Image 1 (cartoon, helix red, strand yellow):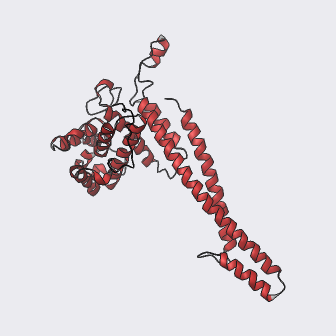
Image 2: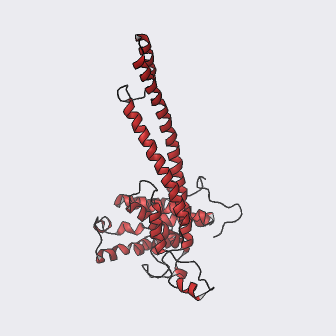
Image 3: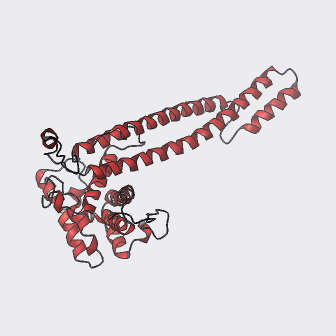
Length: 317
């Protein structure tokens, strides 16, 4: 699964897997999810895309990456067969309902195995809730028996579920979600043999792979940097408008101080020419204050996002 020399997965290459060029069988199954539960459909897409980006940082080859993305898209396909009153229940599930919900793994597996085109991706739906320490379902497998693709999906699945549960509008405080995942991580992909004390620390294996979680960290940092980049672009827009409206203010002051009518009109017309849609000489000062407040808000968020990156880089798995 390691990359060969010069073998990289280009997410902008037209041959790369995207939702619109999935084979028709996969599209059909995802459309079933969309009709039953749009939230689950979106979650499947998000998990599939996250899987691809994690694979990129794990330096896995293109063939495996495409396979992992497809398995990610299909990981919750079994939920199309879960009763809607359970799938869409707004409150906590009862123990009995949760047992039914858990069957989406085996139901998804059967859906894939019954179709020759979906069969290669059955491991995604079937194994994605298995845990390295054997506490997962449906089989309670341990690390050595869980396919690598399912370990990747599990990390992407848990992260996306936490993000949507917490309704993030920005990546500020996203590190709190990553800390939750760290609690589920294996203390190490290997057991140290340097000292008995180190061995005892690693005796209790976690649920998810730290190697994969670290790759997710890098994906999240990329997303934060993208948010910062978008905010920086918006900052320039705000600064340009503040500069423009401050110029309006200077024209208005000169207009008020002018003694001759033609001078007043000259400055008045100069101010009006700088106004944009919805702005007037009566409200421009309020608009200016709104822009200034927005600038401070965005600058504060950028600082918080850079702090978030620093926190994530300091997290230890």
